Image 1 (tube, helix red, strand yellow):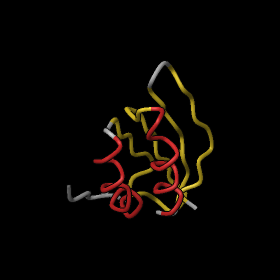
Image 2 (cartoon, one colour):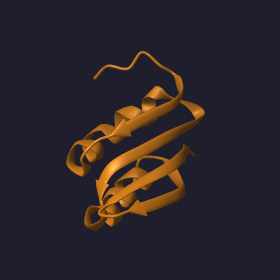
Image 3 (tube, rainbow, N blue to C red):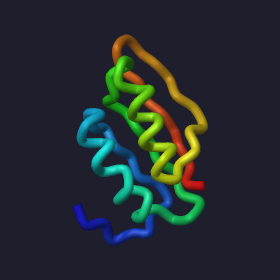
Amino acid sequence: WRPRGPYEVVAANLFSGVLKQAVPRMRRALDPDGSLILSGILHEQWPETCAVVEGAGFSILSSKRRGKWVSALANAV
């Protein structure tokens, strides 16, 4: 994926393994104050995925669990 950005918002409905690999590129593709919407993350994989997202320069604003899935909203920091 070679983003043309910068974008104000990136939405990603990806499995955790793919998301963790793609998050640094998503960060580079966003405006400095852009937002990232995440979904498709299994609940048991959320803690590790959250750490990767935060480590890539995002702040998790909110997360929501529905059944076995987690979605989240993050802002670039």
